[in-house]
Length: 120
Image (cartoon, rainbow, N blue to C red):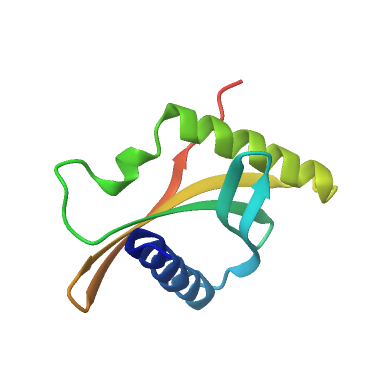
């Protein structure tokens, strides 16, 4: 496995741990539909959270959350819609982004709740 893949898996582990500590229930990890993937699907109270995790090993000029561009957002929205259909859910859906930057052995995390909304 590539270093970037392993870094991403490690970042998702810390993101899940953070969400659990905040009272979220993790429902799915790396849920796939067609060519799209949702990193984490969680629930807290009566809200379904679609969480995109972006992990980097360095500070870039661009912020990690900038990688969640229009195309990625569209895929996440479509995939989340399919998830709610397959699981027969009629629930509010929120799209969050969690960014992690690893420097040596230290991690910096940023949770961006309600990072974007579907526009129909």
